[in-house]
Image (cartoon, rainbow, N blue to C red; front, side, top):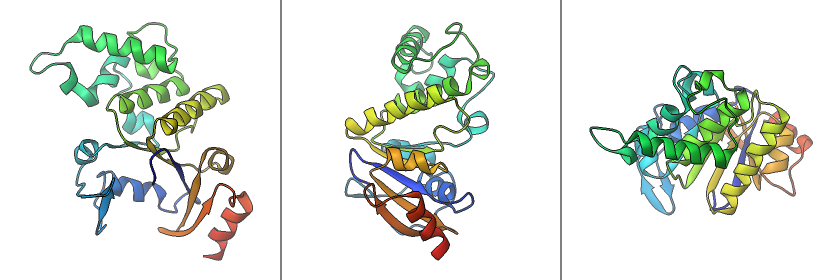
Length: 218
């Protein structure tokens, strides 16, 4: 993965894409012999290790693993970054300021700042997840099915955010089961099948037929 690149991970459901990235992000045991970030060899045993190395993973299941649905947007936004808002006591005014900035920047639409995340639409929930991780200022962001279950308008807004991250020099990995999404967004695409990488395509080479051909051939 290069700085400023959007790298797609394609393949059929069950191909091992999520498992690969969860292992990289410290969410499951990994058998990798070597991981390097910006030329430095690192060890990631937990999500905290990954975060300290500037790597964030946005889960494919926002409702179960990405958000606390019965909590408000403020708590969801800042929970991953409490160290930025005080020590023994939290600075709630600073949290509210950060939330107002996120709502404005990501166009999160809610009745009020106190709205429970579970009461938001799918697209706005996904924006809260994105804003939470971007508030951690990662250099590498792994997005697992970032537009699953959201409407077309919210999809294009999230595509815009991803392109902005790329333009800022962030490295983005996108796992997606939607081939048009991979073809439209990614600079390169890795294809996986049965837990293994079976091919690599540039944006110019990639097509639905080429991707399926790699899967079927293996």
